[in-house]
Image 1 (cartoon, rainbow, N blue to C red):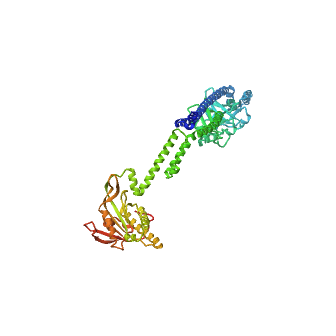
Image 2: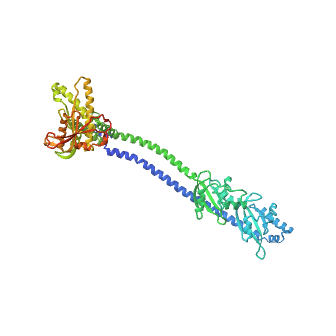
Image 3: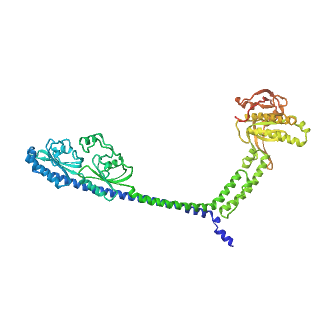
Length: 619
């Protein structure tokens, strides 16, 4: 009772479905791992979108502050340009009192406002009449865009320009000076230091990893925390833009280098206004950025951040999870291996046994029954099947020695039944000359040994060319080509088989002569024609054979070889006509002869015995 309870709880006796279910359960663990991975990736995407929105908001805030500062500075410049003393100096450009009064006023403004670097008044020709920087007096800045626009009566705000004298970056605000008739009589310029706007940008990056920077209309960086990137364009500038920057002496450089940040430039260009962009920065770091245009000038504020800032914590979390996943995977693998051995081992034993059956090694194919589950039942059924196969193979082996393998296989398949079918065949008859006299002089045992030796050699020759040995009649052999297996070129096969029989007989005679025995001679007759082939006999006992005139002719041709000692191989006309000229046969026309059992004559051809190579049949 106790042993039966233990057997019931033994894993070896579990139903195969339970074992497979356990494995499926273990395999399901990776599914949960995959879902976790997907969740981490989704979280990363959500954080990225949130971070992009934040960067865009910061860029929008900074652009708004810069726009307010620019508007205030423009208003300040417009206010100063209406000073009456400026008009007086323009009316008397060489008047010393007027110049001294204006210069004093300009110096006072610069001294009271740290953001103002320069104030200057130019006449309609672009010559500086008064300036807070004495070094600029008398210089001509008519080439500057801010002068050209203001001289036409419109106020103008430049992008950031590096000063031609002091070399400090700043923004120039120009306003036309009108006389009482509304005519432009001069241009008043205020230069505000760029730090007024840079401070607004840098305040956003203070205490963080943010990288806010400012671009002008040509996508040239006019402010960046990394000073090495200042005054470089995102992508190579067109020749016209390079020329305009050079003529304006905007950055005091001969050319503007490109950073080749095509992804960033394309993202800024395709956006209608503000937006976000993902790109590789100059150090090939994966970066995300928000951007927003400045309302009053053609500038763009960009706030960038390395994606690793927020992705690394999640990636580290996933890396830790991967370590756990590997550990769980190892455990699952070990459990799976242990569980799978419960049913894989007997299945492997069955596979090994089946391989032995395939090789015919039935004595090594017995498998051990180690459990009572479905696999154990399969092993028991296999062993029972093996017993049947052994018995069947014994019968098949004995049966195969009684009939040809071709007939045996067709009989086992059930494709042969009592009766026959018409077929065109080539019949080969062979007989030993003087065998009756020879056998009288030999003991019966030696006669049997002689026949076995001779028939073995002849059978090999016939088999090499696909002949079916229909019967052994004493020392005679009856061979059929074309049934029970259909074949091409049956006439050629039959003649080649006859020639090889002669070759093997010669070899056999050499061995017999070396042993002091009498050599053998044989005759071969080949006839091609239509016959009836099939099972002949009764329901209790039948034999596969062929019946027809071609059979009788082959037998008679074999007998006629006694009359033609130079031609041990004779064939009929139908066989000769089917032979291929390129096969190398040499045949002699021996004329028509009347053979026993036939009223009409048979035309006979003699095959000259040839030394042919039989290693590779070519038919």
